[in-house]
Length: 527
Ligand code: G4P
Image 1 (tube, rainbow, N blue to C red):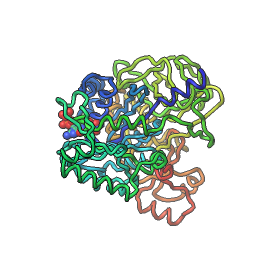
Image 2: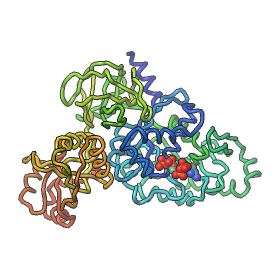
Image 3: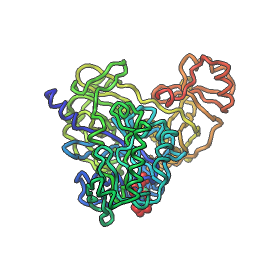
Image 4: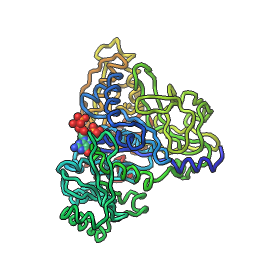
């Protein structure tokens, strides 16, 4: 494939994820993106998709019960002659490690906030994860059709909590609950929105001149104008440099329910968000998009659909042209790998993927050798940096309730470890000893137990352990920690060593006493 063609296709790609609290409107916004891109004629499909999906899959029923999304899906659609790859993330703090992995595969993120809530303490971690990657973030303040917090206070709160300065591109005319439209700061025009029945179709927009807006909207227009004038004073103006380095975030205000502001946001994904660029490699170099094919695995999931009962590894293409059936090299195993079973995903639905370009995300079916973080390539050997595992914050023991199910239990344990549902931590000196299960949030254990029972037929009994806190460590420190009371070093599947402590006090004392030991937090280390 000609280099120019690959470059041209790459420029048309936008690969991003939506990050939000549960209920902030991620599903609604996704659906409206599909509406605006012409993918669905009327909104309402994604919601029903949600329920079909849940009906088809046992453990997704859990998502529906709780109204949260656990399984990330990938949507690919075209808009304005561009190809958009939209990756879903689980909207719950307990799954922030999944979010982190998805972020490894995107070039930008859209942060959706509920206008009445802003950034909530319990999901702060999700946004911190985004910030830790220095990822360009577009901010969408949603639900402006309802009473909201003061927009300036929201900007302030975002800056205080995650250290990102928002730079409004659109600004609301009318308070939350009385949403007339937005000022587009780039043109200084008033864009007036009108509602459509149930927000099922595109919201009509009318461009109104400043004079007419003043005459028609009076005080609301004047107030919005005054607020916009403030931004110049506080340096809240978009620059590509600030946005691309993750320091500033262009801000949009809207209502996904009524479609107000959705077009502005989707246009910004094309106009502001970066197309796929050179990717850093493990040896500190880069792989440019026009070089031969390379990709890395950021997610593995089995049994997404019980009627298939198979295992899908999701790859993000980093360079070159991919054609289904191509022979590639599996970097970790240093062996040839066939990509005959490549699929494209649209939510939970699959189709055969014939080809792909940098930025595209494809599923490889039943590629049992593939693990999270693996690199595939053609031509010059390349390895992309591993995706670090978070230090677990909860530590449990698990065993099969029925000893005759030990085989199923072990199989499930290893599969769910590979998927990163939980971390199975083992004593590297005693591999047969009972492993400790680590997780960032309690719901990971619930998904683990649910899936073991429903997909592998092994009911598990889970009990908490005495471990309280873990830090990433290295072989040197691990050796020294051996002699300390109330600690233990365990290794995860990818070889990361974690030092476990029976209390945060002991960890603090250890750090005090041995400041040269390696005891790190993973996300902070990445950031
Ligand atoms: P999530 O994926 O982030 O969890 O959120 P989701 O889109 O499912 O939205 C959560 C709730 O918020 C839904 O209401 C949805 O209709 C509502 N919502 C989303 N965007 C807006 C908005 O711009 N304005 C208003 N007023 N509401 C919005 P629900 O009652 O839980 O579900 P449903 O019965 O409406 O489907």
